[in-house]
Image 1 (cartoon, rainbow, N blue to C red):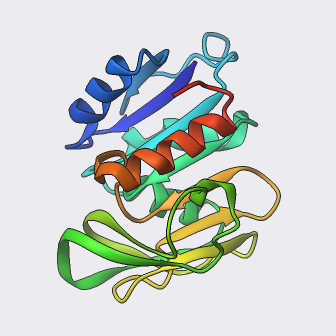
Image 2: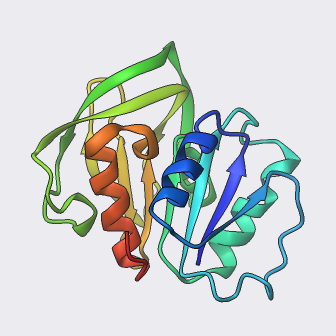
Image 3: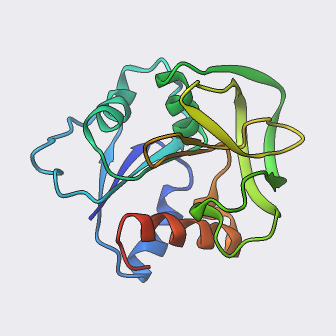
Length: 189
């Protein structure tokens, strides 16, 4: 089962529709809802969604609970990526302009399993005002763009990924990324 922590993402409905179509077993916890660790101990993967709550909202406690307690693959999109970065010692800052477009992303570590089946240059959907500018020390940068030096990162020892973008709504490229992530979670896509 896939656990999704929804941080009030504008893209969650579309993503849930895709998961239902693919018959993927998932559960959603909304921001602010209490997470029952016993109930979700069989989760085989966790998604930290993007959202508009902001990193200093009390409602994002579940994201931190998931990072600390789940030893399964975890992926964060947009704000989820920024939250992972801050949780592990990285820093974010505001961009000069809000991003709301398909962005060319250059993959620096194409051998990472998250990128299996993709070219070195891909396009991913961006919708954010902040970005991670200082990498947490336990992470390595997997991809960059002209806008964000840390478009994609991965923990050096755990399967924790952060995407500044929204692969969950990035067309065929995003579908490949999601399939690769779910494969890590041993979930058939």
